[in-house]
Length: 211
Image: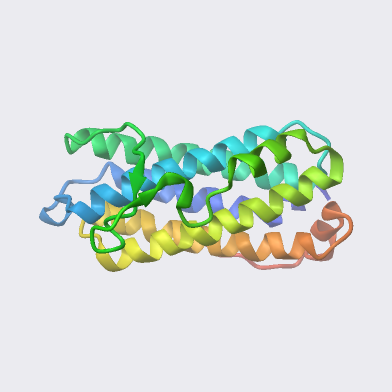
């Protein structure tokens, strides 16, 4: 059922599209950035860039259709979000360069190295993912991206509590919703021997990602 293969992931694109459209709305007083707004956009951009690198390691490989669909969805959505967050940082007069220390906005000013970010894969894990093949590579991608999303949701939830800008709050809510949903789908795929078979087994799922 090719049209149903995106049951896992297709609904997320609409949610990100809503965020892109909203980004062009009139700026209000609540869109003036705070350190939490800037910190979230800076750190989530770095976090997203590793997710994009994970996707690039598996797209076009023989990992199974469901993993290919999942990786393509993450690549599309998070590429859009990186562009949005970098544009906001530039508009605010902030640097778009990747920092070496992060998460101070979440932890009362106490920063940590990028390598210690929530859900951030190690260099060895990224190397192993690139070298793996077939279904094993697909399983590794699901496990690494699941952990990565758990970290991303933690960051988005913190932004929902700490940020002030309307557009940052809107994006953080969408990210928390979308990535939580995708974590559940990765769990479904990881419980099957054949990831593609999950698409048919869950064809009547009803998904709504309106923020």
